[in-house]
Image (cartoon, rainbow, N blue to C red):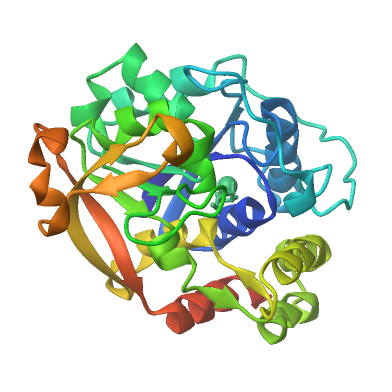
Length: 318
Ligand code: RIB
Ligand code: CA
């Protein structure tokens, strides 16, 4: 039986790659997309989710629109310089012919998880607001979910949105602190590993050669995203594979090296959004800060070459 997943997403070029990677993986059954602000506003994230499902030939998969803003503060705004004004590398897709559900993302998550105890895995690859709202709506999802595997955070690595913080967590640190402290089975696939998963120009060229509409869409949208990386990381070539790394964890956790560390999220000052692990070394000088916090399965190492090969294999076959 394929594993049932809900992807909570802010598409986003790398989100599109992750969604398509999941859809092309027979081990996974994508039962819904829920949308969130981040790379774009939530309304455009919702439009893009619908568009991506049409491109993939899966308009039957429901899309539920999520929150327009973080739990505690206004949304800081999208990042058109990374993903384009349209969130899809400025290719400006036609409007979708389908519509989102008349149900919020949080309500959809609660309904699905409660209806199938132990069966649903949540895969957030954007800010964690919808997941925190679902917990607020129905705390029993903690016992009913199979697992949460998120892309976000940075335990030992520096940030990307700021020197301290990763973008998804930085966009809603209060929500991330709730989700990482909920006490459910949860894996953090953050910058500690995604900055070790690199697709080169030669890898990316394979999408253009592939005769399927998913790979063809990736080939269209990735040049804008790649240009951002090469501009902002001088000397680099190609892209980091952020959101797809969470999908790869579901397919083959053996690709990753993990540690069990409780995590707290900084919500104040210049380090707002930093995910702090209690590693059992220097941080234990201040154990009270992690008192009562459950362990999180934190990815700290990855076989990036094998991960990239897995994603390309899934997405470039006809
Ligand atoms: O930090 C990487 C994350 O931020 C990814 O989810 C990417 O899509 C952006 O939102
Ligand atoms: Ca994302």
